[in-house]
Length: 235
Image (cartoon, rainbow, N blue to C red):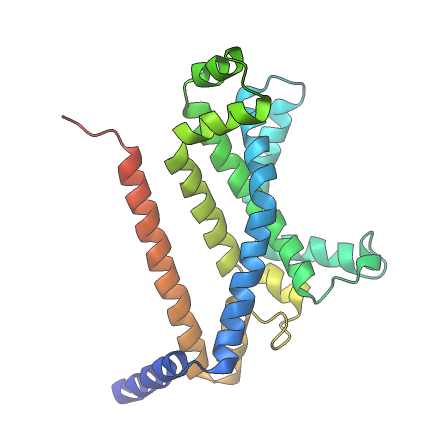
């Protein structure tokens, strides 16, 4: 059995290092969809997090609790919601995004946004409010004032971005339902692993699993490094 696992591992490494087109096409779809979802969601989420931390408006408590609730919704439920929205009878059916990368991006945006909003709100809440008030007093615009505060919170905000990207890159439920797992189109790493494992093609599943494992280690190391920089050093 050990020899069998070693052979599978060798095949998996061979697929990666030989730049197997099927494997790297799946990796490319995963990263392109997740980067697009993160890029579109990032700025609005940060602004909403800032407004929830610094603003005082009716419904603020409700929005904060709604964001926290959305974080705990399983991705397959979000996938079902997006699927129903994109079907021909759904409100977004005319877009014809079902089983496309655009549909997957929409689903991942809905998964990523609550994480980014909640973590950025927590970061903005921790900063000294006088940094914002001082920048506004000195004549800075609303947007430039936000940038001033963001500079003070580089590490916590980067942690929010890494956490949000990690969540959408590794989710499987929404991508499977909305994307349809179509080869070279919407098949990403998690859905491909599920498919190849069910087919008994463990070599490709292990190869893709190694990509996720390495990425997970890199992201966790990055998060740990950022947390270490954020902690005050004792003299």
